[in-house]
Image (cartoon, rainbow, N blue to C red; front, side, top):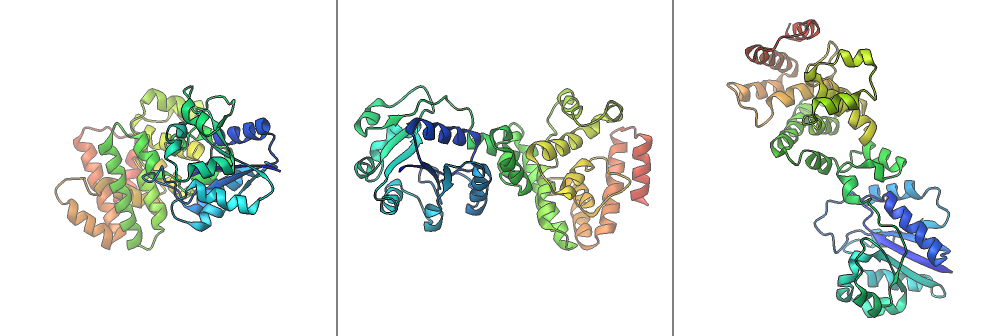
Length: 364
């Protein structure tokens, strides 16, 4: 049989990986292509990586309907840094009578001569490189008899997915990412890379939300991610926010959306439909975190408090207010609402009848 090995972090697997795999099967006339997820890639030692379990599950979801593709757990079970020569030796022992291919990106060609035991690798299997750019290192390609795949240059990348571009992954992988809050911090910091102070506020909100949750024995994980993502859409323009929201709200509903509500609604619907969070409590808390609601559930209150008095918020009495919220949650919430109400009055905010009713309920 003709068997190809496709190694990598797959952090996460994306549509580009699948396109390359299909091209390799077609152009090399393969009987089987084996994805070999790495426990730790020696060339990506600083990359924040999802757990072995999560990366494996995403691979399984992506390959569910692919007959000639399968997954090997060799490197994951072995652990540690993965080196190609060790993987090749393992598969040569496993498939002694078969023709082996090893698939890699053309961006690795310039340093191919620095790979450990590269001569052994090139003699044990056929090296195949898929194009990552128009430039190919012909010296090493020739030296190690590397076959170049005739593939279209791919725009997809795992880095882009970890930054929030979910069109690059299969739907089931997207759902898994959102359901498990994968790459949350990377998505936050990439989205707010021009606004580091706001990103830091989100992190501090998440941290204080966890303290509040633990003080009342509420789910700390939900509190953390509600805090982390609550302001992810705060810097989106009013025009772009309204355009995005029009995909989910009726015309009448849009007419009733006030500007101060835009970022909480934009964040809610982006996280629900793009990132695909399934935690309804988190989505709900983000949706009402600015102006509250006549019905406020526990996480709604946790996020409202954390947003207003987390580390970084500075006003007279804030530390005592933090202590109150951590020792008497309900009384603390009421005090935070009162202070927020007065703060808005001092700013000259003109409250809508709905907002007046909401504040009246939660200050009493």
